Amino acid sequence: MSSLTLTTLQNIPLIRQGDNLTDIILNALRETNIELQDNDILVLAQKIVSKAEGRMVNLADVTPSPRAVELAEQTGKDPRAVELVLQESAEVLRARAGAIIVEHKLGFVCANAGIDQSNVKGDGEGEYVLLLPEDPDNSAREIRNAIEKATGKKIGVMIIDSHGRAWRVGTLGVCIGLSGVPALIDERGWKDLFDYALKITIVAVADELAAAASLMMGQAAEGTPIVHARGFPYKLTEGSLKELIRPKEQDMFR
Image 1: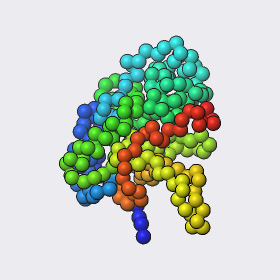
Image 2: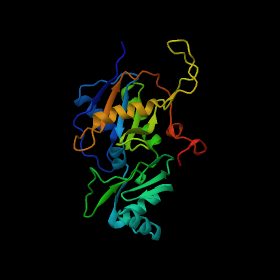
Image 3: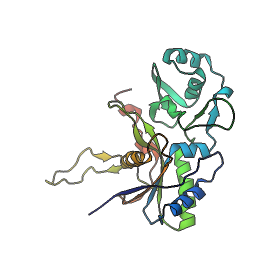
Image 4: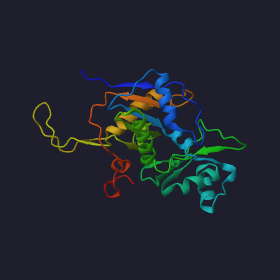
């Protein structure tokens, strides 16, 4: 029998700019009594990566453009936050009260460019927001390399965020950066129980694991932004965010 075990790492401190996430992860593994094995995967919430990389912005330091002011009036959002959304986006696709749907600079479509205010508190006065990491694949790669060097184990690292879905209510975890983990498994040509060859099945395995890990992390005051996964049912190979992004020419819903 196969099994997938997900364990939230304990005693993760509040992350600040410049913190060494590798040291924090290794300490949390010890605190949780987990010894890394080959093929384990560490799943990190985007927030702690963004905080460590200094992606927090004080809205008091942002001057909104005329376009940001226009969109803010249309959506009822803070024009300074809207300015950051514009700066982080390649294109605005939709806008309505409470939400701006964009193509992020990283390529995926999401609400408000992934900019978040929950669980965000700066050192000074004012309102702070958190931007996504500039290069999540690279962030995952650096953390993976450092942990593999420290432990001698071959692992994977994923960075995940909570996104909405076009046809269903609610958010769920999706992968926005990965290293040492396949993004997709192409099952075309595989045979089913009745010897039928699959023709179109490509599984977003990184997103499937991201959703499961997000379930364990929670969304509010849980304080568990790192999940250890053991038993991932596929061979660890290199993947990248760009594999998960549907090309525009195949996007029927833009």
